[in-house]
Image 1 (cartoon, rainbow, N blue to C red):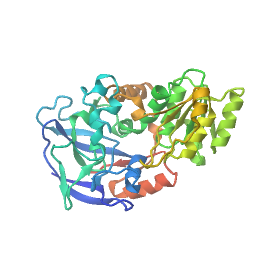
Image 2 (cartoon, rainbow, N blue to C red):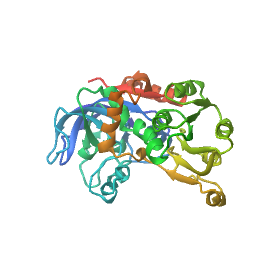
Image 3 (cartoon, rainbow, N blue to C red):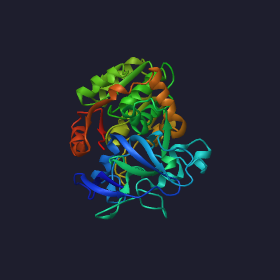
Image 4 (cartoon, rainbow, N blue to C red):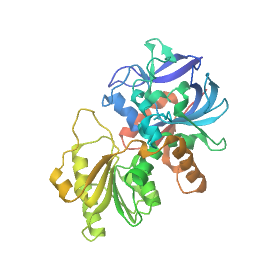
Length: 370
């Protein structure tokens, strides 16, 4: 089978559309006809060199589609099933899955390589073997993924909305509900309200936060944050800290969630300073692996009992939380329809990332044509 895919060949260069060969699914593998793919900042980190993986690499790790075929031993899905692709696989039996922490499944060690060590490489083309971002590569018309990355959903759910629940929605929502453990009546600051942060806003409000302060320098994103549940929206971290102090009679925010496009030591320090005694800072943003971005006073952390912690996939368990979030969408408790600012064809993928960098989109969405 042939597919057209958006491929990164070299860091710092635009994505190129390439026709690739797709092998038949092997043991435990699933052939997917992708219908939609979200434009997430994590792919941009690969393009910019912050995250290093196998090259050439088919990008895209947020997506949904229809199962076309399955290989031997596949039990989780069947041909014709509608699925959401989870950018973190969940094997179900490693130490982390067995202790309810699917977001750090051991199979996730391979997501920047493209496929499992020793297994088949389903994608090939002019440059030889091609990897797939997060073992998915949703910027392709077709792909072969492992069944541990496929989550079956009800067929009446719209696939364009369901695609968003493969990354951005659970990562943001779960950062508030699970990792920050937002409680009713708390004050929460969210730094950056793009495709992840806007869902942290939704999660914080759903959990009962009385004040949700969104911080973003882009006026359009501040306006969007208000539509998604932020009670206040400001342009700078200093304004957020002062506002949180004012709203809590000098106590400060109980929780702070960092969902900016690129992690910096400055924003981590700002969040750390803004939370109260016993406050919690949740780090969701990414940056260069070798750059130290947590530079705070350990003495202050000790004396004021402050916590800084990381969160991947919103501490969600894909096999249960993806259907759970879609259930909240169905009941009207989770907004997905308004998340997509603009749709693109696959050949507009670079334009989509230009729009992301310019702050024009909450979420851009590729609609595949077959």
